[in-house]
Length: 308
Image (cartoon, rainbow, N blue to C red):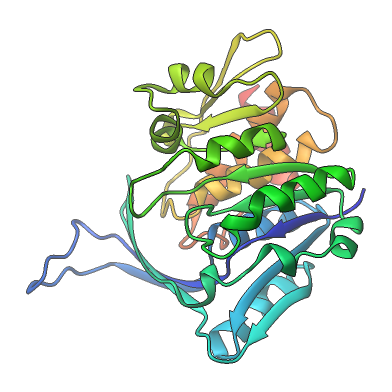
């Protein structure tokens, strides 16, 4: 199998867990735990795929600094091909501070180099070496976004399948430009809030029907409620999440993406792909940060075996 190529953002995560409430200006909130780790939706997804034994390459941009070295080394040690990552002078590698409780999280991000990747950084030769192109954090990748339609078109012309996780829009404008990309996507992976905002609908089922175009498979992630999708006949498939002791939900949706894409690229039935995604999302919440406790293939199989 040719590698899955992730074209995405890179940043380090500083995760504070056990926060009882969000901080306010002029006040202080204590956290019971802290961890530094590889961050960004794109990198967490790539690390999750590598953890499952999936071949992965990464195209991205960091600053020429210690945080950039740290992130690249982490991916290299995970077995990810980092040859297409550029370190550029004059940029700082992005940093995200995550404040996490058992039930939710809040993020503060210094953008830095997060938005610096351009579509022409992903050349035809790089695409030719891959079998699938995945993009995350559509709304954060400012320089990639204008050329993404062309990049996806080049990828499909080269025979790659494609997927996109939109991520949250910090401006909450959402817009219609992403809808123009859907015909070029094989898999679309929003969470419930994103799917409703992008489609203009109030609930996940209505969003699924609104986003259906006869080609793109849309999977809506529902957090602790699992996930939903429409099968080829337009029938609703729903898969629950799994009961684990939750430490931190940071990056669970990105681990879901990895868990879904791993069997999807192997041609497994949709329900099995949803179950793998749900298992990987659940397993990732066992530790602090998005990558500390991502599931192996054996762990996923054991979890699914006990819940089948």
